[in-house]
Length: 143
Image (cartoon, rainbow, N blue to C red; front, top):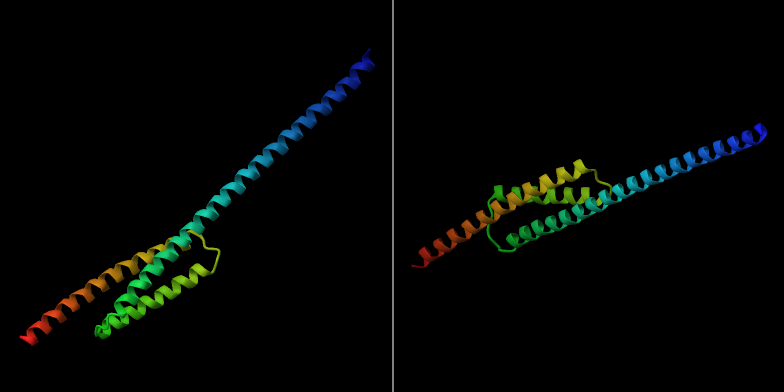
């Protein structure tokens, strides 16, 4: 009877070993699946953020073009500020076109876009003030 117990014990050891291997493989597969899913989610959010930033840059550039098309004589300082803003837009577009951006690069780009938004709003208000002043001077001249 001792001979029958020994093969049975060897078979049960093999079964326990196979179960442990299967559980380890399942755990590894689960880990890799979750890691891949998290990476895909991060790529999607970066892609969405990149698209949003491209749209923001397009709006800023459209506002600059709109102001430029008003045919208002700008001071040298305002022209240089406009040129600086256009260079910054070009730089941002190049950074976004590179492809793989890190989270810190995206945050830096977002900060630059906020600065450009502030500049464009100040620039637009200065242009509006110049237009009002020009209109006032025109009415005074025509009196």
